[in-house]
Length: 188
Image 1 (cartoon, rainbow, N blue to C red):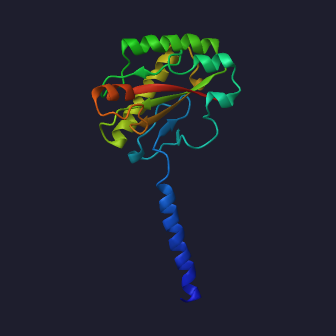
Image 2: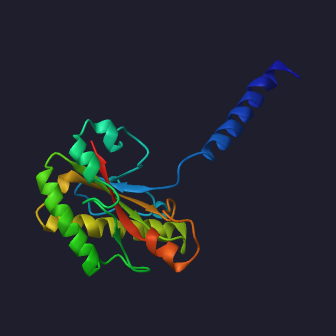
Image 3: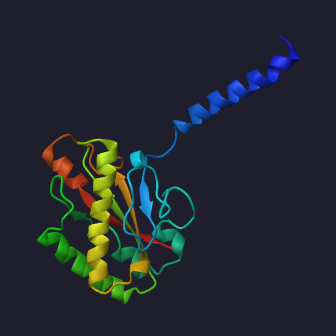
């Protein structure tokens, strides 16, 4: 083989390696900056106010934050920052979701330094693009309710994971219902 063909061969190998590495990326997500009006689905391109969730060090687990133990025991399943659920193909808040969010307001007022990522999730039915948009509407609905109750909009970031991060991998209505949710993650 001639040496003049080596750069071409190396370029092809690099392209193939890049294609293989792309297969290991996390599921798509759409995030919005605090106070933005929402995100756009990936099929329509990203607006300036959207940013990939995987970039940046601002989203960490509570343990990494140096937050007091009271926050660690209060956050999560069964705590004041429990997930809220949505009906099938809906982004409107149920009465139960509003009551849960009202409890979140009280908790957020007693923890004024905490910032949250509000994550919108869907069940597996529907296209990726549709579920990313629906998840975004769900996250925005939860955020908007909290802001309407007096929590500063700057304390929130919304992100949609669509159907890409299910809680329950089952294929029945009970599993679908668990996956239609807004989840609250403490940010730095």
